[in-house]
Length: 152
Image: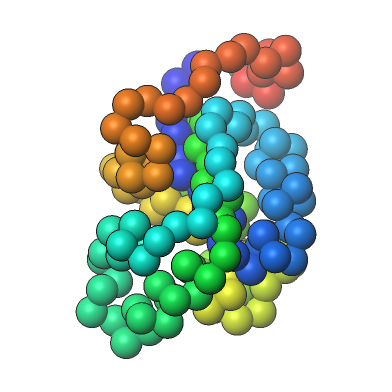
C-alpha cells in the first residue's frame, strides 16, 4: 500500500471550542492513521515561517496574532492520497463556501476562524512536518488491525 503523509493543524478556535476529538474522529473514520501529534502554543516567529507565503497579504498581522493567541494541535496523518483527501475533509478555506459534511462546513462560518489548516501538496506537507516536528522523521510506525479492512 502506497501512503503519504500530511500536516493537519487544529487552530486556536478549534481547540477553544472543544472540537479536537471531533476533528480527529473524522480523519480516523475515513481510515487515515494518526502518526504524530502534539499540543503547542506557537510563537510569532514560528508562525511567520509557517505562513511565509502569505507575508505580503493585508491580513497577515492579524493571522499571526490570532494563531499565537492560544494552543494549536499539530498532527501528522498518513494514508493513501491523504493530502488531497485531508483537504477535502476540511472543506474550502472560506467556511461559507464549504459543503455540509466537511469540517469547516459543519463547524465554521468566518474565514478568519476556519478551525484547521491542511497541507496543500506533498511538498508542503514535508516542509510543514519538518517545521512543526523537527527535521528527523517524528512519526511512529505501527500496524493497525483495521488496515486490512480499509485498504486492498
